[in-house]
Figure: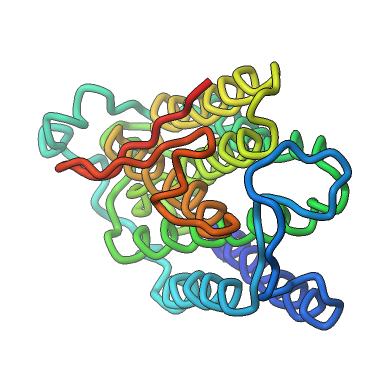
Length: 289
């Protein structure tokens, strides 16, 4: 079946576990749609926090994530009988061509290690009160589900050949598994930036005056950036793949906790430590520290 199929089965299991957690939390009273706790503040053992869960929000986000993931599971996983050989590098667009690299297994492994570290960066949020952990965990599951499913669906629909296919010595096992044509976008990078933005935003919200805020933000983004770089240098992705993955992960990592803020809204975003601004080319996120 190949590692791609295994990755997807794991994603489905995570999604089912998350559904179960939502159902359990609803029956246990963890989710309170009438919650009116304190606003942005540093938590010191209080039951109230800056984020709230509700049955409606969690259902909508989870259903959206599932709706994005399921089509990717049903789409054919790629051509397993590849016969085109090494592709013509001159056919790569100029923006991506200069950074295209042949396959490097050591750097491929390095990228996998880095993304593993990146997705674990929210562990620093264990510094919050234990009563906040459930809300944080649910939000991180949701943002991860959205990042993973969006990237996975785009991979299946676009079917872009990876950079290593333009060089001799490409990994035969990846070709047999059908993974060679899933270059855009970079799912590793999406998951890494989802972890970085989620960690930075949530930590800054709970601990606006913490001396550890800058190290947490810098460390999480360094890991995410290193993940994207490793994916390029290993020959797995083009620059545009990584940029798209970073955009997807950043969006999910920010939007999920943002829309869980107590009394969330653009007019309140200036009360915290991140501003959102609408620009002609898109959205700008600004950390203040």
